[in-house]
Structures are given as structure tokens and as C-alpha cells.
Length: 560
Ligand SMILES: [Zn+2]
Image 1 (cartoon, helix red, strand yellow):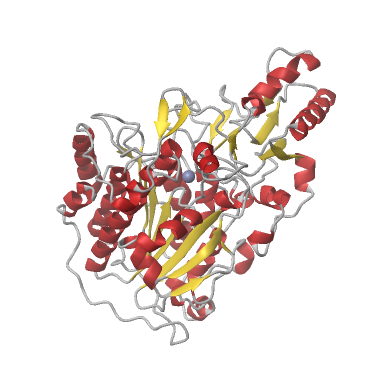
Image 2 (cartoon, rainbow, N blue to C red):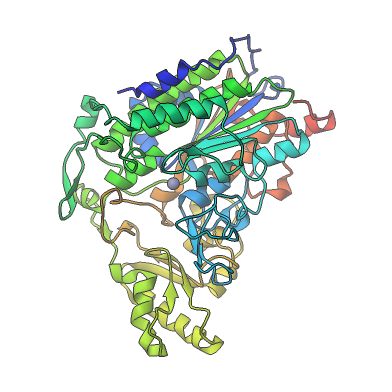
């Protein structure tokens, strides 16, 4: 099952020989010395439900982190807009999307000078010649600093390096001030920094291009995966459920829905650590790793079948190899592993397994469709509403006069609220009356969740919430049969695991948030994260962390 890519990249052998690592005291003992390298790993669409389900089957990297680390089984991407870009924006900033400004993967900005008003989260739409489809990658929309940004501000010799399958993962985890940022642009491993590729990336591009030219080798599913195999026809001519993650030669699309894709990122990450000597410099470094294949597999096949089984068990092994390579560097590193959001399985399979609520959304709920239906009422031929898909943010056409906008708003809210698949539709005024919530995220009301990823300058004029288990994919297509993005816990709940060598392991069930990661990592590397500046809090004891250690170190000077 193992992808040969990681092994091949190991042959690049850029890592220096191992040196001894000093032991770290368990929680309650003397303070840990600051870690030299933080490795922040995001597994895209790795729902807590998925982690819980496969946890007994893991033998590789997930098993090691779960056995030796502090596992928060009830981590939350607490906000409503459970998409990749908002989710990644919370991981290393300590802020909810309401604070990061990354309210969705994409939005409509009717005030932008560009002709194409559809804006992607990690692009700079002010660049001439760009469109939503042909964008220039940039962190300009991210309104706050990441861990790497903060670290470099206090210790300029710190390195901030990001590599991910998706540009938005690398951008939102890396932030504004990166030394290296690499992501798959659909054809090659690419960067927005303008820097020439280091040897690692040049080699990765060569290796990956050669691999892409060949069809993927068949992954032989273990019995535990074949036990999950059952075909479901989700659209005419489209059946999923017992697939084997096969990819044809030169297939640039399905290469992403395959363990090879994560293998490439992990190979690149490991080789970058060696080539750049991360963790061996005069100050602590940060490496962000975005593993995107789980998300592509989830979208292409759902998360309940043989395909996802193959993906997560393959990733488990590759992650194990990656951590072994990290050990060989001799660097005292800390790991945090989590996800940008969870996911919902195919409604067809959920229904077959007894979930009576599972269904696909009515295509008429799409903002553009309803906008078309309402248009004649207001003397318009073009849709009076805009949106990126079904549900979540909906924007009113700003070319209408103020009185008409008000009437369109009322008409749209009435239509949405009357629909049997809609749980709620909120206006901007209603949402902005709510404060950005704090405290246990499992207790938040739905409108509080919406508020946590709402920005009045960017978000929709209406926010539409579908009922639980109504999939926002109305009409499945190849590569896109299941999704996430809802306010419900199957999309919000994610595992959060902290690991440091020698720290006492723990399995903790209290609800915590991905915004807690930054204030928890801070003390591990001696970085002060003032509590007032973030939405999260330091999680005492996570991988042995002592939350007040930051204060101690800041009083004695920045040590890393
Ligand atoms: Zn995602």
C-alpha cells in the first residue's frame, strides 16, 4: 500500500546525521526546554468521526501520535463556514474566521475594481489580468499574523516554511512572512514568493512529473477496507463505494485524490527540513504541512467507503515514515496535527445505513437560481442574488437602489425560510447583533457559529443554513459527490493532537478549539502569545506544555 514516492525522496538524503536529543520532562516536572521546530500538520477533511472510526486500525504515524501525544478527541473548528480556507486560517493564528477575515473559500466583492467580482480567498484580485479562475496566489486577505509571522517578528532568524497540496492551505498556515512556500498549482509544485525552487522542490517536481506520466499502481485493499466496499450509484453513469483510487497516466485531476499526493507533500516536507536545516538554526523554526488528499478522496468518493479506508490507512503509514525521518534529524521538534474541517458522507450511503435525514439539496436553493426566480418581481432580468453554491453566504445585487435591496432581502429571506431543507436564514443585521462567542464550542447556538465566521465587510447579506445531513451537492459529478461546509458537528469536530518527545500521553475529551493551537504552541517554543490578542486559550498540559512558561521565558529574554 505504501507509495514509493516517500521512499524515493528519502534517497535525496538531504538530512544531516542524527544527534542526541535531551530528554523532556513530563507535565508537572521542570519546564521543558523550548522546542526547536514546530511541525504543524493539517489533514484536510479529517473529521473527528473519521479519526475515531479508524483509530484502532492505525499502526503508523497516526498511531504513534495518538499513543504518545495528547489527543483532544473533541476539537472544534467552531465556526459555521467549515471550508478549507477559513479552517486553515484558524490553525496558526488563534483567531476565528471573523477575525482572520477568511470567511469562506471564495466570496463576491461587488466593490472590487476587477471585472470578475468572484474572489478566491488566497488570491490578490488587484493584480492586473487576474480572474477568479486565473488568480495570483497571495496572503493579502488574511488580516492577522500566523505563528510563523509572530515568531519571525521577535526572532528574525526563525524560518517559516510551508508546503501543502493546496495553495490556500500553504498560504493560511504560512501567512505573510514566509521563507519558503510550496504548493501544487495543478501542474507543478509552485510558489507565490518568487523564489527559485530549492533542490528539494526541483527534485520533487522531477519525481512527481515522472510519476504522473505513468498510471498509478493498484493499491491492494486490506480486508478491513474491502469490508467497507459497496457500490452506490449517485448520478447516471457515476458509481462510487468500492473504488481502488486508480489514476490513469497523465491524469492531473485524480492525482490529488490519491495517497501519492500526500506522499509527495510529506517527501517534500522531510527533504526541506534536511536541506534548510530546520530546527538547527539559532532560533526556533516552523514547518506547516498541508495534506490535501483526504479531502479530494472525500469529495470524489465520500468518507464511508473503501476509498477513504485506503486513503487514511495509506496516510497513516506515510506519516509514520515522515516522523521516523524527523527523528533521524536529531532535532527536538513538536508536532500538532489537526484538520481544517470534517465532512459528510454520501447521502445515498448514509441513507442506506439508516440515516433518515440524509438527502441532497434542492438545486433551486442556489443563490443564482433563487435570484433568477425573484428577478422579475423587481423588474430585473439578471439574478438579484449571488452566491458561490448552495447555502451559506448570499449577496444581494448592489446595483439596485437601497429601497429595492431591502425588498429583495425580505423576499429572499421569506423564500429560504419557507423551504423544507432550510434550518435557518439570517440577515446581516441579525448576525451582527450576536457577539463572537467564547467558551465551550459544543454549546454554541447556530447563529453564534455563523457569527464566528462572519465579517460584515466580506460576508453575505444573508447566511443560509441547511438542515443536518442535507448535502450542499445537489447534482453529483465525477470527483464531487460529497462535501462539508455546514454548521453541524460532523463538519466542525476535528481531532487536535499535540506531541513532544517524552511528554506524558493523554486522551482528553473536553471540547477545545483549533484557535487554541497557537496559544498552546507558543509556550512550547518560548513565544509569548498575549491572551488578549487571540480567540483561543493555552491548553495546560498538552504534550507537557506549561502555559505560564511563556511568561517565565519572556522575563528572561527570548531564548530559542
Ligand atoms: Zn478542506
